[in-house]
Length: 394
Image 1 (cartoon, rainbow, N blue to C red):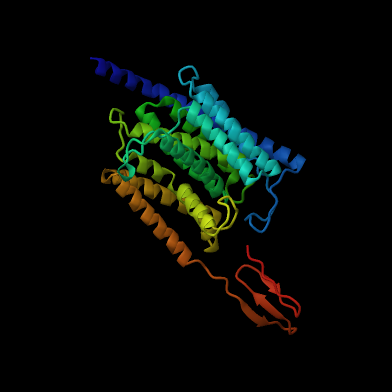
Image 2: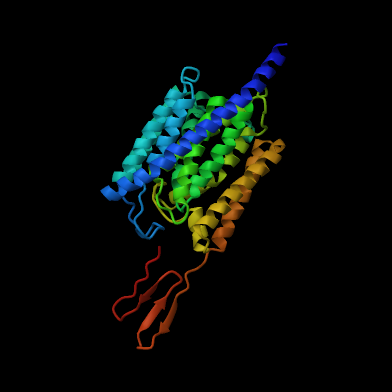
């Protein structure tokens, strides 16, 4: 009888939750949509632009304060819909979000060193872990490991949160890519939490998705505004909360819809930004550089070199990510370790193809009509005189 009453309550609660989600997503969308033009006007008045340089892709000054609009819509919609009295841990989520937002905003305006950014991310992660209870107590069967010592669990939680936060920051390299991936991941997490009745986490996910949809209207190629670090770091923070909660919840046998190999499935949802970040960090460390040293070695740079447009790159990354999610879900019975290794192998194979077929810059010496020699390259043409010849690559 108790089970029947619980099922009846759950069925009756579903329509209310659906309405709450629609209202939350609508509020976040409207606020962010109305805020972006205001941010653009202020940026124009105060001359707050991201100036192009040899490492950046855009060729004209663009405001990078879109994160202000994203954060405004996301935070207000979440505060209006999520009941703090029922979900006390969310006060710490929003505190961590404030830390990350102002950290990113200061970097957008003044440029912070990698060390200061890292310290700020550690502070936000500590709030989530020690006060908000967002942490990993187990490896959930990955590599045959379940329960882990507390110290290892804390270290793993810090690593997960910081890597996920930075993954969206580093993947934000072409118009619409980070925002599209953020919409994709939050919709998946939000849908699952809706199905299993985790109302507050579903609302958190859909409030971020609503803000990003509004921002994407202004961010598709050619972008009128960039999200900056204040936006990309915020997407990473929200996804860090959602993926750890997903792994902890989906792995429980008593949940409405348990997901086998939850750790590997959670990894698949974030696989494009996560693997790109881990790959780039590893390459930088192997070469003796700081993992936060900027370069042009990300997956979107590799695709740009092959001549793809921003929209095509975004479509490719979303399609690949969706393919891995489908693979992980359909093959979840293989176990987390086997599934993780399969996805890792396929990913490395894909990156290998990009590297192997990376276009080479062909240099052709030709003689012009007036007798001057020219050096021609796929990206630039630079006149070659008797004194010097310099070719600058992006």
